[in-house]
Length: 212
Image (tube, rainbow, N blue to C red; front, side, top):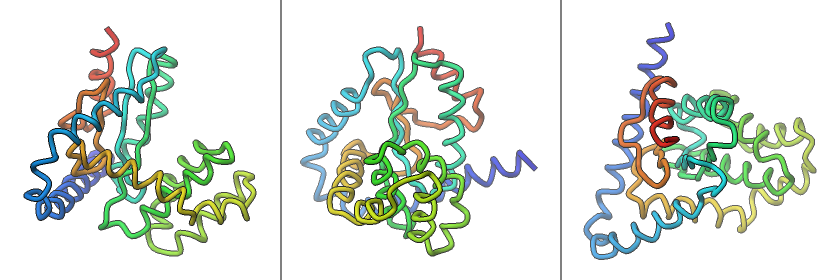
């Protein structure tokens, strides 16, 4: 059963990547002249996100409605348990157009961050993915906000604000400049992980190599 689940999730990641690549391909000709400069700038930003006190910084471009992102989300906590302050994990928003509720999910997480509850909302949205992906997402996120003790009125205002939208779109533009075309996409100390390992042990082995 576990092997079947992993296979399904990895297949979902491949399908998401293919769809995103197909959408991006129509724009590739007009962007060719700018791609080198923008990629360099975006990579510089990823490197700036590094915590100088950590040996490794893992940057993840993620979509809250992506099943593969939910699967790899579980690695975040395991990595922190295994490496502690030696690893810094930065999650960037990369909502895909094929996921109608991914953008509001990202804005909801940023709205929760304003009230100091980023991690709580981040975890709850991934945990409840199967439910809110079916619809009524905004109301469900408001329920999450209430459950974790946020000022719900403030949360609602922030969730739909231009400021939260700018934060999400800035991450997405940065990802596109780095040629991100599927989720999740990881960069470790600025280097892209080209093939995401299907097991935690395989992922941890990559991190271990950067610890030395």
